[in-house]
Amino acid sequence: MEKFTVLEGVAAPLRMINVDTDMIIPKQFLKTIKRTGLAKGLFVEKRLRDDGSENPDFVLNKPAYRKAKILVAGDNFGCGSSREHAPWALKDFGITCVISTSFGDIFYNNCFKNGILPVRVSPEDLEKLFDDAERGANATLTVDLDKQEIRGPDGGVMRFEIDPHRKHCLLNGLDDIGLTMVKSDQIQRFEDKSKAARPWV
Image 1 (tube, rainbow, N blue to C red):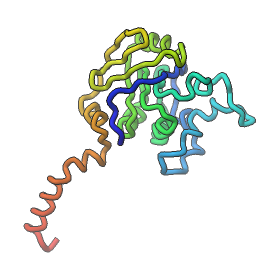
Image 2 (cartoon, one colour; image 1 turned 180 degrees about the vertical axis):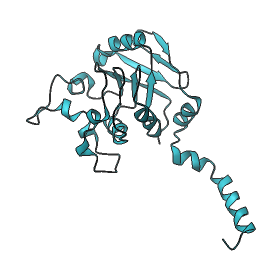
Image 3 (cartoon, rainbow, N blue to C red; image 1 turned 135 degrees about the horizontal axis):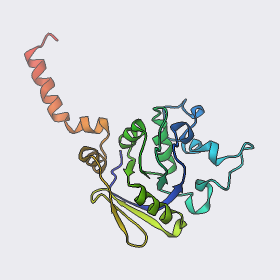
Image 4 (cartoon, one colour; image 1 turned 120 degrees about the vertical axis):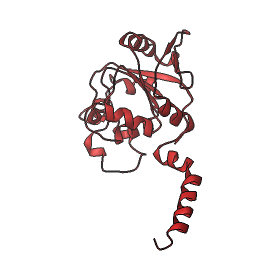
């Protein structure tokens, strides 16, 4: 997993509440177990019209936000079913940070396991971030995980809280497998000791 340290980029404003995982990545895209190629399905029912053409009114189709790295979203983002494809699709599109007041619990946990930083902020701070994001590509946000800060285009700074263990994992690019591999020497010593003590096993 890639390390998450400091992210600077365009933030796309998604002023919608209760965006569920089915809206993020509809069920027809869940057949794959690969983490790539899912960007085409991200918000597809919002991004495309019935005839398959792009909906120019959807934020990620607007020129300023086509390469957004940050998503500023309404309350309760990622609610609904527990599909890990939702963070996979966001990551494949290029979004590695989602900012909201609240998240669906399973989606929130899945983000950390896939190198995406979900940031919880107050409703007042979210409104400020929406204002910044709506200024388009000329206004970038900087998300500093180590300092736990979001810096706006005008120099404003807001702090956010994060679990220390999850912060450590993102800063060091450690998913569940990575966390296990950090202890590979200890695991090997245990295995060697166990084999010597019980050679019949």
